[in-house]
Image (tube, rainbow, N blue to C red):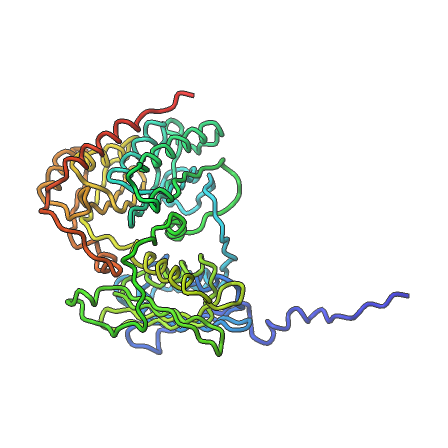
Length: 487
């Protein structure tokens, strides 16, 4: 006779019976006069804070304040938010979306590979299947243009692309299809050819005169066959991951300051700096990360994304903004349960957070283009920009029906501001562009107002003046790497 212990079948449902459903979302428009309060109570799991913040970020909500507590097995969070127009959330469809999206968040994959996959997020008339390509490496003037030209020469149509450039590093995520059939590229030989040629273009940056840290930056292109079945994370998070792995945080201008100084006015140059400090709370075994910087949309997403991808767990947090400055405080431990133990580990976290805050910010002319979509359009546009001495520091390229909608942040090849005469020259050369808009607001909208992170500005040249040596080098690289392998 064998006896087994008895387990009440209702035991597994006990937490839900005590605390309620696994995730409760309350959206309150009555408590505060100027903002909407979102309260989230949920069973705790690694990465849930990032999932919730990402849901709010994806619909362009601005997080004014937030209080997070996730000790033990329960996660409780409060967000004070406004919509992109600075108003409360009153659209019932948006409210329903938030409740449904947060209530059904799934486990985050910490490792994501580039792949061809079914992209259900495309709302245009384009086919729903595309091949995804990820690229990272050392940046140089005209690199994005060379990538666009290489894909065009390889008979690839760029359906959508997003690229960030920061601290001499480039990260790019592009969705492509076959030029003739507009279908995913699933031939292994052709995918290998695309990957090999793009890798050659990226590796052309490394020269014997570069520093060891630049040479150590990995030049990498990843593609995969259609139908592997792994979903990609949000594109912006993936760009953060690529930049982090490319080492864009390696720069001596990121400084350590403890404690953070009090907020300064925007007119003070020092007041525009980002300050990150870390100290340990030995009684509770937490590391306390304090961040003070200029406030902007998506700021909390950038910092939480970086801490999560660096394998840190956020147990408590407080976020607030005042006089255009953001104050963030995170109580964290590594996933192994320990606080940050060494000065080198603290220094790396400080640098990575500084880079995450800075890399989205673009201090350049924003060029918005809209034209009838055609094969090779992006290659032609970026070629004109490059031939006029302009370098793309950030790009957002999309296809909407029969139109291609492109947004570029531009500087000259030395990293200086762009002369308006050069922009006018570019405008005259683009005859087939329907809509051409230039915004010189320091970076375009909300992200443009952020100052560089504890950095010293390089010596400024007069606008429109370029180094002949740099121009010649760029042109030599352009012609020497436009050859396509025949095997």
